[in-house]
Image (cartoon, rainbow, N blue to C red):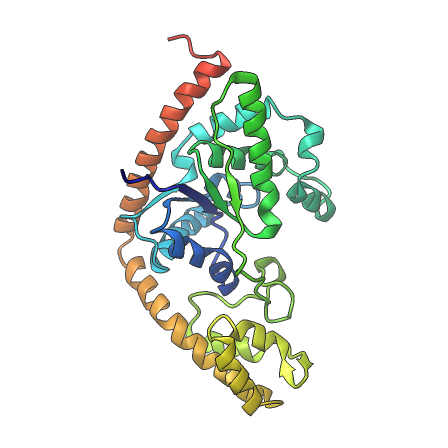
Length: 318
């Protein structure tokens, strides 16, 4: 008897252009794992409302993320691709979880503490963010959720909520496991810090050649043993360390030549992705059809789960 695949679930906020750090830190893994798992990938557009309050911008960002997903190789025949807002049951389940969760517990969330440090006032959506994320995960009985080590807490919160719900109302939710991929490194930005849109130090995943040249040439060179470390760390994404050892030995101290080599490798990698993205973006109706169909399928799953949840909590009368 053939065993069914484990369910993998992940999502990404529609918040602007993806960069190579996003790709090698998460997106590539979604593609690599789509054959191994029953994969469900969503666009977290309700989460994006905590920071984006411009309707046209958000609409465009949602469409762009869907195009990005398809351009990197996610196959809608293998992957359930949907947007969060097409399934109102997510928000309904989040409310139920909020009624089980205490304020002191949520105050320990890293994202909230970071937001509080950086801003005087934090909106309620940011504070409740882990509740909606728990609903995103637990609604579909996800076995694994691929996350970076710094995002592990979100899955742990979902597990805590599932345990509490199961204890009060009976076994209902699967306890999802974080899938921490050991081979995923933190990708440095052009200034040496972690590549992040908030730092303005990114290299876009679908950058044009001229943009690649400009950004690579602006990478801060921090030499250690004659090797520009920031250049080398980014270069490792595109070539094996054995290949790089020979190249960096031959061109030791010649930083411009090493940057030129990185530019050439990056152009070669990005060009087919960029071409594929332009092709997909030329037919947005096909992209929207994929999202709409994925949303209908996901909602059918969510409705089935919520029938059970409503019965368990006592609001279902007929």
